[in-house]
Amino acid sequence: MLVDFKFALDAGEVGVFVGPSGCGKSTMLKIVAGLDHDYQGRVARPAGARIGMVFQEPRLLPWRSVDDNVRLAAPKADEQTLSALFAILELTAHRNHFPGELSLGLARRVALARAFAIEPDFLILDEPLTSLDDALVARLRDQITTLVDGRSVTTLLVTHDVDDAIRLGDRLFLLSPRPARIFAELPIRTPRRVRGEAEIAAIRADIVRRTNGNRIERDAS
Amino acid sequence: MLRLLSFAVFLATWWGAALLAGGEKLPPPPAVLAAIVTEANSGALFFNLGVTLARVALAFTLAMTLGAAIGYLMGRVRLADRLGDPWLILLLNLPALVVIVLAYIWAGLTEVAAIAAIAINKLPLAVVTVREGARALDTALDEMATVFAIPRWRAFRHVILPQLAPYIAAAARSGLSLVWKIVLVAELLGRPNGVGFEIGVAFQLFAA
Picture (cartoon, rainbow over the protein chains, first blue to last red):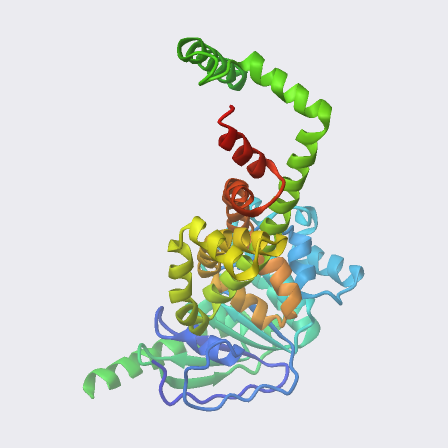
């Protein structure tokens, strides 16, 4: 499913995998997170790293409140940290709600809160912005930016959306369709906060060009 | 209200049938009530009922605890499931009477034999139900607990147990009625007291 897969992230860096749906991105994340042991190769995580993960589905416990869901994963988090986190993610009013009462967008944010509450050394985000409406995506993207920049945590994010990738990442990895292979690595030097629309458009054009190039190369072979 | 009505219909049917069949074969409700009052006054009713209920409680607790543990293990670990399955099928199909008789032969007409026999009758049903629950556990939540390194006991309590709860409740509900039924047979065959024993005595005297 994945072949010839090699990448490294610097501490505090946000790496983004961009690739078509079903190319094996989630499998790669599972391997990195230590959930899938059925692979050949080597994964080096910082020793003793706390991992925070946001799955594609929120994966909250339906029988625990929002607050308890977060506290279960992060028993050491103090009230001050938690309320600050809930405030950034606009969840303060929902702390006593149960996951069944939340929309997908809200549940996703609870999952984010849970991942950040443990103050992770390594954050894994699997399509955190998928199947949400545009206005919400923009807000949630800002919230993720705030949280990631505030803690400078090494992050691995997977998305099929080029725009999200450019706005959130420090280093982009472009993936081919199955069997997935990294065909280009694109560092972005400008910090997230100050990336202008012109620059984003330029990077997007570059990605489109490389993707097409990859396709022609594949078709030729 | 509807329940009350249904109960009234039951009483009326009983009474009508008693009138038709005659008091010897089917005593009418007032006669039964009178017998209950007499037995209660002598203390025998509460003594025998108490003894039987104590056996029910013991056997039930034993079977549920063991059954839930074994069922969980078999639902989670393939090897345990493969090894345990033949035993389970054997126990499931072993008639209650056979278990009780064998228990009395091997362990004598003792309290331990009676409780064990009753528990063994209930055990496989608890195993099967809880195993079904363990098989239906959400792996997505398991992965979540693993990634977040939630300690085993906490994960069991907050992630696993709430998912198993409906299955455990179902096993308990069917189990309680089953144990209550079987305990009477065990008492009838080899105990000197309890509701089952009293029924046995009455049957031998052929007095209803």
